[in-house]
Amino acid sequence: QVQLQESGPGLVKPAQTLSLTCSFSGGSVTSGHYFWSWIRQLPGKGLEWLGYVYYSDTPYYNPSLKSRLSISLDTSKNELSLKLSSVTAADTAVYYCARATGATSSFDLWGHGTLATVSS
Amino acid sequence: SYVLTQAPSVSVAPGHAASITCGGNNVGSKSVHWYQQKPGQAPVLVVYDDSDRPSGIPERFSGSNSGNTATLTISRVEAGDEADYYCQVWDITSGHVVFGGGTRLTVL
Image (cartoon, rainbow over all chains, first blue to last red):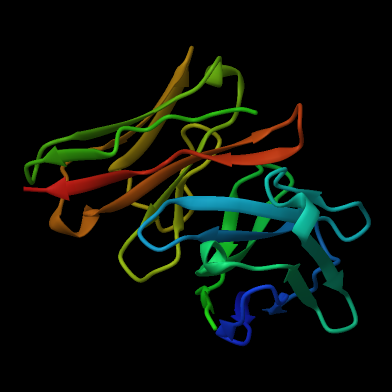
């Protein structure tokens, strides 16, 4: 059964870097025509796309976060990672990893999400 | 950047049909996808490519897309359909993903 599972520290101090990983099981991040993405949801708000990566291509980022964001694939670990630098309380959110099919550009597989809280 | 606009809320009585709209400039030229999100859960794809349903999604969920408006229609609404619904497109011009602001469906 294919699934995604996010993991991370849960609590990050302001001005530090938030690092999250997303493990993919039941397949390989290099197989098929898939784009691997991070999406977040601020408390009580809607979905915000952060960025995506295709394993052999340059990542695409949300312009509003591009200067602080890095998304990459670790093919040896079958993982997707996110690094968001200089975080503030406004970055407190549930962070989801998701897989988009190249054929349809829809997100057909989502992780359960992980809450990251920025607080001193 | 491309913008998708959704009404914040829609209410419907059980057994009736609900229509949730997603507005965007010439959105009819793009493929629109719809997600259902229940409280505390991750979103679930319910319609892709305007009107196709993933396996396991009831036929009560359907979609259409033309001009500046895409629509998700849920027929014979049930209490279990109460959730937030989001539309999404892939803006090929910029390579960016765009979500609508979401619509909360309330079943009366």
